[in-house]
Length: 272
Image (cartoon, rainbow, N blue to C red; front, side, top):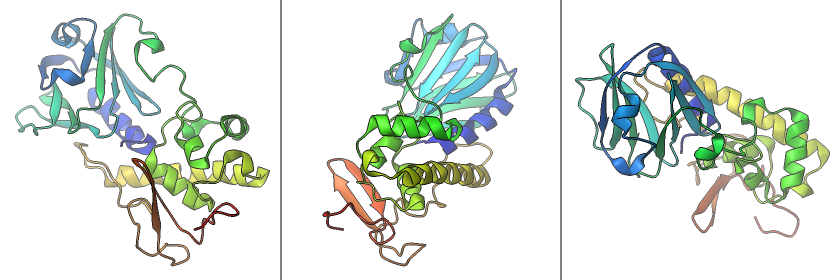
């Protein structure tokens, strides 16, 4: 799942490549991912990209009097390619530009959605966009503490609740909890004041480092998710980089979390 560092790096690359560019062609590879107020070709053809923004896990493209808002969900990716380059089978939307490049949206699960809307667009027009909290790297310490206490539940769920902080998914929730030395099943209300502040500080450190590492590892054409720098996510059974204990994976339904049983001790009375 693309998370805040992935989308932040992609936004910068896309803003530099798309600013002032005109859409000269539109090809819909799979209409199931498109949500539009009119035929998408009519809405986008001839429009000029004015800005690229992102909020949490949403990418927002401003084109003249049209907005294109993308929720990549689990597997959506953006790609910048020559219009002559062969498109992969999971390409769902292709926008040709007046400089010979194409902006491509790829999604092998087809779970993501591309909203193309004309005129002033209220956030309520895009499911999940209205009501999201501040982007995780930009929330103040005081607001994070207040929101975390109010949300309750497991610390991991606090990080992943987009109404509390926006942009964190499974991978970086695991990384932040490991950095903070907190077990994923610790409840927010059980955390001491220092632990909540430590969780906030860990979130800021992890995301700041990740932006630099994702930037360094992402090719100019985008189209990849950079994950080699993660310390615990996807590394169950390998030594913890901090203490050497074997990392573990816990499952609850479809949810999986990776953690260190030594560095991240469980709540009292709970087995490791």
